[in-house]
Amino acid sequence: MEITLNAPLDMHLHLRDGDMLKLVAPLSSDFAGAVIMPNLVPPATTPAAMSAYSERIASAMGEESFTRYMTLFFTPQSEQQLTQAKATPGFFGYKLYPAGITTNSEGGVANLTEADSTLRMMQEMDIPLLVHGESHGFVMDRETEFLAVYRELAERYPKLRICMEHITTAAALQLLDEFDNLCATVTLQHLIITLDDVAGGALQPHLFCKPIAKRPGDRDALLQAALNAHPRLMFGSDSAPHPRCKKEACGCAAGVFTAPLALPRLAELFARHGALDKLQAFISDNACKLYGLTPVQKQITLHDVPMQVPASYRSYGQQVIPMYAGEQLSWSVKR
Ligand code: NCD
Ligand code: ZN
Image 1 (cartoon, protein in one colour):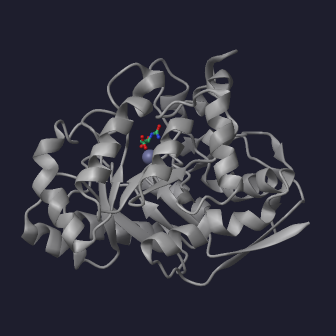
Image 2 (cartoon, rainbow, N blue to C red):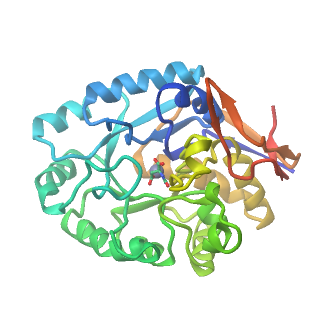
């Protein structure tokens, strides 16, 4: 069995910077492009910083046909700043983080009223808003608590394109169905694992991410929506590499590194559920329609030939542990 995908896109990707960027960027090169997250240290808040970062990605990637859809870290903006951002080549949208909610998000938004005028202008200018939707409440309830904020945003800015990033709950899917101006990304791991896989037995730091994996019913609802190619649900890996020493540590950093195996594992998952014909929509077409994207032409064939996932990826003095480290997947990329 095999499937050829046109222009697979990763709609939520962390590539980091420096030596880590050099290590991980080429591992996403089977994708035609990706939405690049801005939570660097310091975060990318200006078009100049964003463009410079995009150039560093291009040289680390060493692959010409990879489109970088660049995001800026949301802070309140003037009309002139928004106009300048929109005119910057490669600019995709703003990523809004509640202050302190995840890795490198300390400079995020503490109070949404401070964002009102910016969001109004973004709506007028048709600039997408990507949101890390978690409250500061109990860890299992953070996303459901944040749904009230999504609802408020969707109602107050009916023409703003709002993307609920890395959704993890059945409740988020229900909200998605209530508002046409909402779309969502979902990761590989949230289609597969639950909190049990993270902490039900021996603690698995390499499966620890924000938002934390939820209940079986949530995972099942997300998987069904992906397998049915829900038209406003897109693949976004949220592949978030951290050095091994930051993961296998007291105070484990949040993030699952999936970039090098996401496509084979998705093909395996969709094939097992008899839904391979829906993968193209989930991995590219939905995003292209929702955002009007025209990615570079890149075809990737996946087949049911096993892939050995390395125990780790290392170079440039960096080491990262992927999901499924040392295990065999039953699908791989046909080279
Ligand atoms: C991400 C990271 O490490 O940058 N971590 C994560 O657990 N997903 C940040 C994020 O997207 O929340
Ligand atoms: Zn992320």
